[in-house]
Image 1 (tube, rainbow, N blue to C red):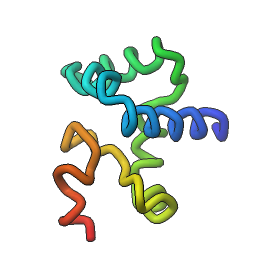
Image 2 (cartoon, rainbow, N blue to C red):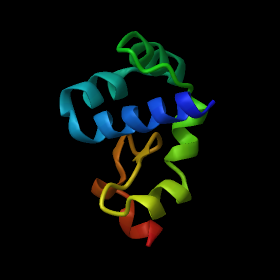
Image 3 (cartoon, rainbow, N blue to C red):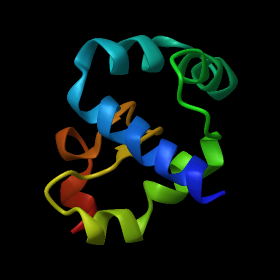
Length: 85
């Protein structure tokens, strides 16, 4: 489990820094399709693991890099950070 959480953290980091990759993932309609895409790219983690890290503890741990939000379809700091503070 710890290894897949590390992988989920790496995925979140890539989604925050690689605009093209993020756009490819977020263009997919379902979470299942998104998960299949990131797993094919070498990120062996589940949507639950990604969401777990995108929660409060991740935000507290790394305030300069707010987590991705599946609802917003992008980095939180572009759309919903004001609501979270």
